Length: 130
Image 1 (cartoon, one colour):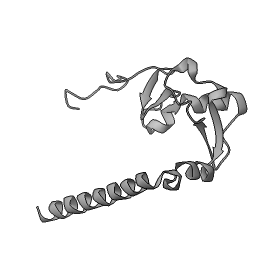
Image 2 (cartoon, one colour):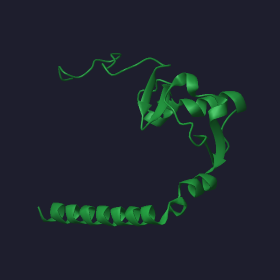
Image 3 (cartoon, helix red, strand yellow):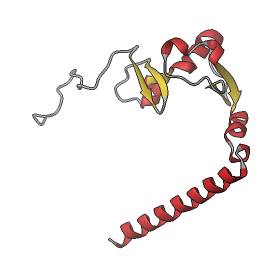
């Protein structure tokens, strides 16, 4: 074993105990398990989802727990049952679709997507020729 590798039973300096909170992608998450080889989605859960589960039980298949419109926060005390709701994935898609945006913003969004595709296409072409 190399000198710089951790010995068996040692934890890295980024380890935190169960119950620790962090903010990822604008959502407050809580560490709920300490499985060493598990993905982060197993060890960390969003607090708003945990609030719903505590009150109503597991989230049904095909549904997600989201903040009510205008209630998204990363402050633990403000994440209550009144600020979250259970929606189906199809309803979530309808909420987040481009069709809900005003026409000028739709056009800009489509242009931005086209520009991103062209940039990625050129980047792949340059990687292939290098």
